Length: 274
Length: 157
Image 1: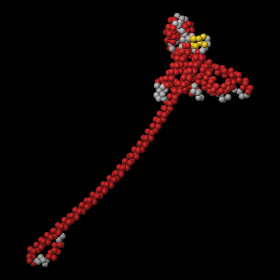
Image 2 (image 1 turned 30 degrees about the vertical axis):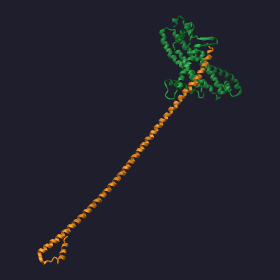
Image 3 (image 1 turned 135 degrees about the horizontal axis):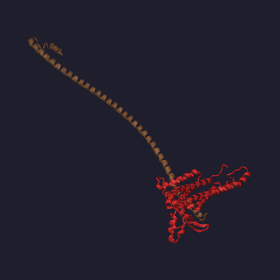
Image 4 (image 1 turned 60 degrees about the vertical axis):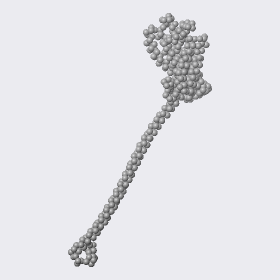
């Protein structure tokens, strides 16, 4: 690809890693991430809504069957992990799984397809193709992955507060994981407990987000690198990596969903044993 | 790090999609699935019930069949007895009738015989008187000897 346009490999890679941005500094938006993620989100919603609207308890159609299989799968995962009563967790898990999978799936499209299309579409409006950027995979954007993981984090805190009360939650921060029985030992252990708990709590959204981002970034980068090779190597390598990556995107979407369920169910459990 | 306001936009979008899923998708799908599960359970139960009913009906049908067969046999038995009785009566009646007719015939024959005997007796008396007249001619007075002759004639049976 790079040979055709006469730019160096470095420029090509850099072009692929740049967002379509409006605004300056912190107050800017990645339009590509927003556009693709919202489109996919609504694709998810409307396609599932079609099935939900006409959902019948009689013989289901093909699409309803598919949706039911997914809903049943997610429901089962939630029921196996979370034993409380919460109306939010299962729909949240379904949203995460399908939406993240769809966003990850953007990686399966030929790496230059949508960026090149954007360049062509931009030309009639007088845009310089060199400055038309489009990062297609929304989960290959830390804003996206952190938006997901921080939302989950906020929900975790919310449910912790609701179940244990702010005081109960604060008490847990100071008295776990190391519990003591006399006052002196309690005071001594309060600080280490707090540090450990803060690290543990903050590590959850961080790892959740960076795991997805790292996987998708690596996958995307490998597609970009394969696109730099001679055309006759590109095809077998692209094919092999696409097949393998198909597994990865599914696993990552599943993992994000499962960890979300686990974190939220942990928020509902208090440590009665101590 | 490229963290910027997109994060908030995406978080809002995420919240929106969670809400939409929770409101418009999840309840409808799970409701349909639960209802279908209930329907299938009902259907299976109804099938089981139907099978049991059929079994009961078969047992009952066999019972009724047996009863009908017994009753039929009973009816045939009664009919046979009645037929035998009627036949017996008819036979007796016929026998009595025959007896009566035989008796009547016998009586008639006896009457006939008596009449013939009387006629013969009268004839023999006449013949005997005639023969005696011829033999004795005048020696015998029919008037004087009438008692004797009648007595003679009576001895002929």
